[in-house]
Image (cartoon, helix red, strand yellow):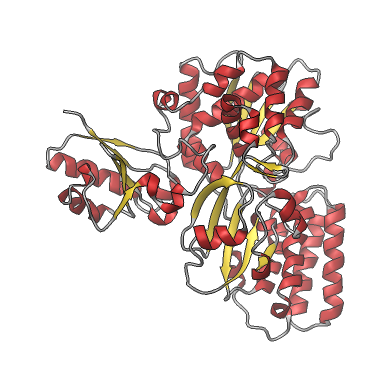
Length: 516
């Protein structure tokens, strides 16, 4: 008798709401009923409000149920869910769920579909097709394919990946490296974690392609210590890839674990940490592409950038460039968080507006109250008021509107938010996470907190607003890296669009709420 396949996510988001207990309950119930099943621990589909999302493979396709608790399991069996039977938690075919159906999944095509640690499953779903093609190409041809795709760094800066790879390829050195920046520290972001937990072989394949493209034989994945599940999954996947010959003398890689410093998301601080030193920003030049890890030419890309390479090599740079708009080509995994009804990951071609993603896809606020502010791009991203929600989500449009797309994190706030507290938190965050190397970031952020406090207390508000603007200008122009250089974005946007919140006597919320 063929076992019925039941999929229960092992993703950290699903585990946090009881997925492990659900998997155990399903296994126990099957034994009690003498039913032959196979439980597959897949990655999350990214519909977090439905987690734990349980799927059953039926003759008509995979049927979804959620959110499932351990207490629901017996009732699901009673309803015949092994055959796709109806239940109050029934969601129909997974691929027909509106949130999922409207996506254009390239990078996330396998996540939620396969067993993350099964090489056989990975191959059966087009895995390693890009690498196999790359192995038959000249290094320069691989680089040009990536350049033709228009792929830009998905870590925030948006620098063309093809140019970075070409620079490392052309650099002369007996040793080169590929470094994956998996130090995903921005608030409201989780796409990197989902890739590492849900499709680790894709990242291994992408890094190997990068190694072939630039002549590197060694790679490192730098993962933040707060991601224990991702660390375990990546280590297990690397061991399997090495055992099957996918990794070896031509290109090998290993995981390195960070100590939780936000600044190590900056590429040169990350290199310092990898080399065993305190994470502090390096002055540039020299660029890491010329003198990076251990002084050697180094490709540093984030998870989403490297994870896009297999699809590009398998399908061609032009096919990837057919998605998106303007100079923002391909797809972007947008991450919806904060006060939003349907939070999760939504991969789509560049060009959808903020309003569409928040209301049509995200369902508006979880509280049911009006949206007042939306922060895009992590804690250093600008706050957009309702009047700017028709801004398209692409690099240039976001920049023109006074913000940045960053890593694709979108955090929603309703009309109870205190934007003065949010502005103060931007300075506070910078002060706490500064590496301390440059004065504008180290001291400017502390003076910024004090200045915001004076403004909201009514102490010479006009003079202190001018001082806050001066501090922002100084930090933007003189900071060594983006931590100090971008902190003014949320501060300036809050001062510009939410002026009433800075007036003395305005209703205040606790600072810790703003930080959350």
